[in-house]
Length: 270
Image (cartoon, rainbow, N blue to C red; front, side):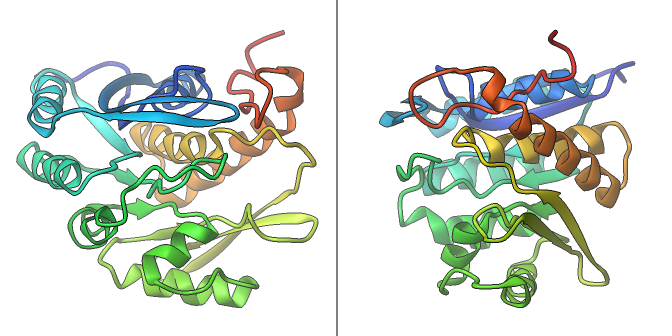
């Protein structure tokens, strides 16, 4: 393996054939940040802006071979992990990350699609908690995901979000970014907690139904910033600004008949 002149980030996630979420959204985000994107497919997902139709899981041994192919050849500086729907897949990915000495791991605990369809089997939740989350530099749950990981009700206000972020930190990750997109009020507030400091990241809430792929995009934007050498706090700030503008520009796309995708290339397309 040789050192690359361009920062490289790896996404480990499921697919979206309509291009708004999953690996496709991650690669678009990496590209928008000027980062070279590599990908390992964990599941083929038949989905669109209206919902999920079917999930075809990739066999864990083949996932391990994909990971070895990337790490044996590329200088990966950050890893974004998205949809891992089965316990065996989670265990395989975790073991491979250890084997290859991966760092700057961003875990987006994908459980439910924007359409409401479940993407993670119930028995995989414990594997996510105990096997993968402890390896993360940062995890990026939304409010329902945080509640599910803690077996609690969804946070009703910002103090409750902070308490849940503290609870998630006890699972062993180094930092938690609890996203407030499902909250109320004129601002969307995300809470970053690393055990020593707490930071609030706010953005004006955008009135649009086009939120397909927001979680994938935010977490991959954080990974892109880390790959470029940014600190976690700065990477989160850059990612928050990016996803806010991508959501604000989403109505310009008019893609699909359901919850359309955010505009990953708002700064590049004219």
